[in-house]
Length: 263
Image 1 (cartoon, one colour):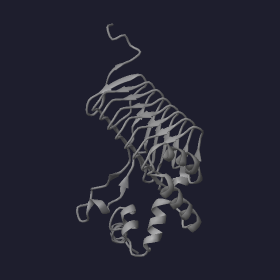
Image 2: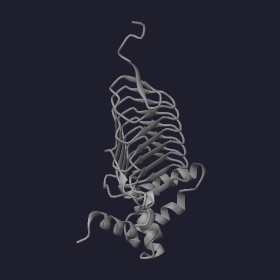
Image 3: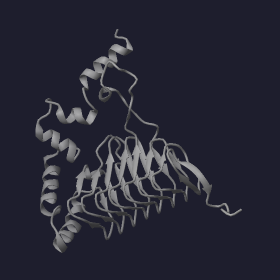
């Protein structure tokens, strides 16, 4: 019987890169199957043809015509789309059957909605949410949930290997990163870090009515209480209680919003 280290060595040789990278570079699957696995998440020619038709017809179409076509045809491929949803051009959509979008939402140009991964919950966007241009929602293995009224400014990232859940009325400035997993074990020096296991501390959970300033980074394992303000440039790597004002790297509580700052 192989010892534990030998078994790990065999697993590393069988998976020379990250899981996703190995799936894309393997020679065991033909290019069409690789594309289907990455884009639609199933080996169905009918689903593939429907996805390709919708994307070619309207994904990059500009103006009012593009808006109308996306409104008409995107419901064909998404798991659920609510009423009065507006989509901008050039949105990257992966595993759309695992993406649910509520009523009155806006998904601006060049966003990425990537629901691939093992978690069947994928991406769930509540009612009245706004995703400004160039936002990325990426499910590497976990799920993403945005509460009603969430507003995320441009060039931000929500990445989930386990879970990232933002409560209602979350306000997010530009260039904010929620990194719910993705750390790698690096304890071994005899094999590359890329071949060592990916680690998670359980995900990111944010309660209602929080505000994140520009350039904030929230790391895996963080739980943030309701009505918290995180100042621009802060790095959150642990829990923050409700009504906190947090600053710095790593983030520390400057004061509680319920307290009188002059007392």
